[in-house]
Image (cartoon, rainbow, N blue to C red; front, side):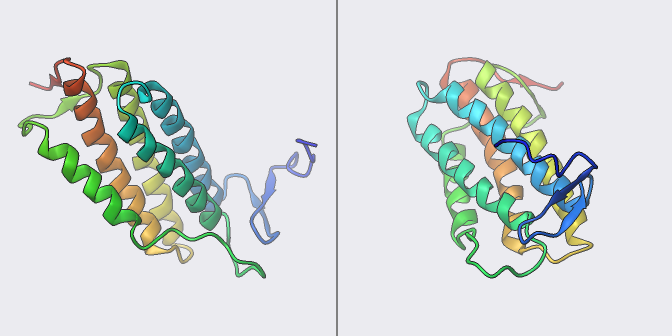
Length: 179
C-alpha cells in the first residue's frame, strides 16, 4: 500500500525508525536531493538522443543521489549495511567537468540560463543542487554528515553548469551572456 497514514500528523520516519517533523533539517536535506534527482531525471530524458555519454553519466548521478538521500535520512547507526558514496565519486565528476571544459571557449561573463531547453534544465537542476548543498551544510551544523556528500553535491553543481554550456554550444546555439 502506498499510504500508511503515519505521516498525517506532520512527522515522518528516518532510516532506523526515528520519527521527526517533516520540516526537520534532515528531511529538508534529503527531500531537496530527491527534488534534484527528479530534475536530473528530466534533464537525462531531454539529452538521451543528443549526448549519450552525458546521459549515461546523469543516470549514474541519479543512482548516487539515491545513496546520498539514504545517508542523509539516517540519523543513527542501524543494524544493517547502508550503501555508501564511493571515495572516487568526486574525482569522477571532476574528470567529466575537465573533459567538457576542454571543449568549451573560456567564459568572461556570467552565463544567463537558457540557450536551449536542455541547457535551461541544467540550470534548474544546478540551482536545486545549490539549495541541496545549503540544506546539507545546515544539517551538518547540527549533526555529523559525511564530508563526501557535501563535496559531491558541490561538484555536481559545477558539472551541471559546465554541462549547460556544453549543451548550448554542441547544439549550435549561442550562450546568452550577461552584459
